[in-house]
Length: 404
Ligand SMILES: C[S@@+](CC[C@H](N)C(=O)[O-])C[C@H]1O[C@@H](n2cnc3c(N)ncnc32)[C@H](O)[C@@H]1O
Image (cartoon, rainbow, N blue to C red; front, side):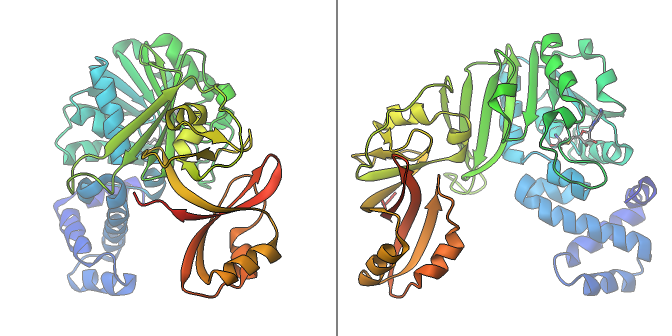
């Protein structure tokens, strides 16, 4: 989409085309296009409206019903922060006293809109003119145009003395190809600028990829890893006055909220990120920590809470004598600990009539799907197989779930 097509969507005719597209989107694209044409929508406008309608459907998982009124690009949607994560960040900024915020590289405005909804005055800066125009339209559609304004420009030129907080979510995909950038020095705005913000603005938050190397965390910053329903979604660096602890894992449970539509439940785990968990033999129960806990290097803190131990110092499975309820790890009961041998494992599973297995692994090079085929399972029973190492030796643990 270009700016001209976007402008056409913003006319009354475009708005009617968007409404018509919303009614037919999600099905067969040819039938949808024919339906719009027969309703008298010009071909170019119909294509643009259908693309928006499809993107809005896809965005519902990220933004909920608010997605229905948003303007989106494919790349902008992929990079946008999930609603639940943006809302929590906005609440934390507001609670820290941030009243005015610059969003440097605001994209389609997912974070900025959440901050504005929390009552923060947001100044968005966006280099791409179409994305900036859509962000402004999104502010208007949400009734937040007074609180979230967008200027087209280079974020590095923004006068940060105008605000008391700064948020930056640098682009981690190459413009044009959309390929992921893994090296922070290739982020845009550049990493040096982004991390330098903390020295200029006392309330600075930077969103980063969850794979961020801990060595890149600025001294004194709090690094937070966030997962939603067990999926690791992002990391954020809370700098200056916003830093509360060295490391934090925040687990958000969106699917199992107490009431449908209610805000997700949040479970925080904090610590230094450099503690070491004790190592021992496998015990009766295995805990598989949430990826946010593992990435935040908080396995030792979790081990302390659960009175659990590792079986290998470099593998993040924990073992305990009791199945303690915890939101931070999945718990399985171990029935067998075997040195890995395909033949032996196959024979044992046959004997127990195990026909279905889930396969978990940490510290094993085995390919779960190949193993599943090689096991040639048959029978009505189910089991969980954990491929790992115990004191350096390839090991398989046969497990069963612990009722929640
Ligand atoms: C990861 S996206 C932001 C997504 C946003 N936080 C959201 O949730 O919707 C990064 C954005 O920064 C913009 N950008 C990259 N470099 C920039 C720069 N130097 N100045 C302004 N914007 C920039 C990109 O065009 C992109 O839209």
